[in-house]
Amino acid sequence: MMEKEYLLANMTWQEVEKRLKECKIALVPIGSTEQHGPALPLSTDHYIATQFTHRAAEMIWDEQKVVVTPTITFGFSPHHMEFKGTITLSELTLSSMIADICHSLDQHGFEKIVLVNGHGGNETAISNALHDMHGNIDAKVYHANWYNMVGEKIREIVTPPLYHACDMETSVAWYLGQRVLEDKRVDEPGKSLVPGFISPDMSATRPRASVSYNFKEITNSGVVGYSTQATKEKGKQIADTVLENLVRFIREIAKI
Ligand SMILES: [Zn+2]
Image (spheres, rainbow, N blue to C red):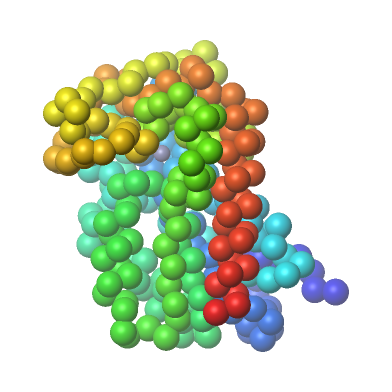
């Protein structure tokens, strides 16, 4: 029986070579190192992305022996720079890094690569990387944000807004084992920049418009949402759904 090892960084090159004869799917967790209010550490986005990929690889092991690369722990976070500790890459650096990682995996023979993202601010860089690679990479590169793997059920589980260090994110991080400074949790729904059109809420209904802004303009604490509402139980409910969908997604792309 094959020893259960899905972390690329823990494998030898010979083990990777052998694994590729069995499975050609690689997962790449992507996050950020940015402020998440007074109750959550700066690692939160990459912590969650890492946990979800590791757990998904664990869950699907009997069917697919996917490999998980080391996490990209920095993301695109200029809008959080007014809060101490945040480290941001430029969008170009991030998309170049993603493309370089994918080209490397492609060169070794990985045929499907799933970028599992935990930070909304990375989405444009990921899209740009996907467009840049299109046509000059053999591997199929997929992009999945964990928060888009939740589905409609989320509205029944958490208190909106869904945005940053909110009820949803705090619950999920907590359940997944992240450090949470429980008594430092705060409720700050965030400021609407154009009422009725531009509000910090991923679950907001349309009509919607957008504008660039710094987080200091919409929140004092760094939180946008109700983190005092967070519980590990809610986190489990959400995480189970995300994992179920992520595993289903991997199962589907394995068939293509
Ligand atoms: Zn986050």
